[in-house]
Figure 1: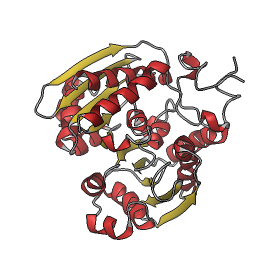
Figure 2: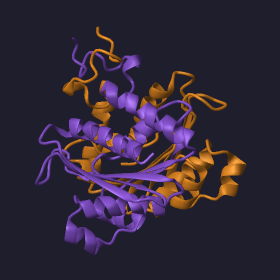
Figure 3: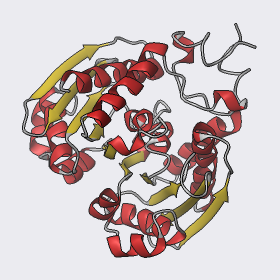
Length: 174
Length: 174
């Protein structure tokens, strides 16, 4: 087996994010179900930094399902783009159920999409490496929350594992 | 050489986006220079769908350089998040110099970042597959524009090649 970190870079075939098979299948399945239901998606990402939006727009013919995405790394971004209150972030912590829920609901409120999913967590730093809170909001429906403790598995793996969870959460509200 | 599309998925080491070596080096170099200058970045992405934000937030210790990102796939997203006028999009086309420039300047106006870079193009569909317009705006500085015609090289490669150009544009305004 070759080392994906060296040998394969530069080869045209390797020019896409390398996702585990089940996550790649999940992306396609979720996008097809959202499209079939004539719904659209939005994302509010902190620790995943745009990766979720990136994979949700990377399937030919289905990228129209994605309406818009917010990458809200900083607290001011969370407040100004999604309507969170800095006092609430200070009280609950940026990595918390409350902030994840507010991010998902704020993404719905600030988009035309039907379903919003959010991520906020510590990738490979912070007090609890691998702790990620997720929320999924559907217009006129309840908002769900999930928390995962992936542990200190590294920045890349935390982000990829977060993809799987976020996709499962979208699937669960369809 | 193994096939990156099958054998390697699922291996923990392959859990990060596979970028060509020079692009990966460019990400680190650009982030370090932006951090050293105590500046921050924002992105406004259409055809790259969050991939640029994702790679700009994937370097440990340097993710604070990234202030916020906008994934503006739809015209309403471009208008509502970045202040574009639908009439201008209709007149110039969503894939145009005018829209790329307005996206970069709109990202600056709607963030606290110092430098904004935008992408709008056709990945593997549309009238001109591989046509991508880029703009880079710096607060109190001029906005630069660049257009690339990558050709019908496929969705993934267009997105990756766009990473290189966007990073070069950030570098050029530092």
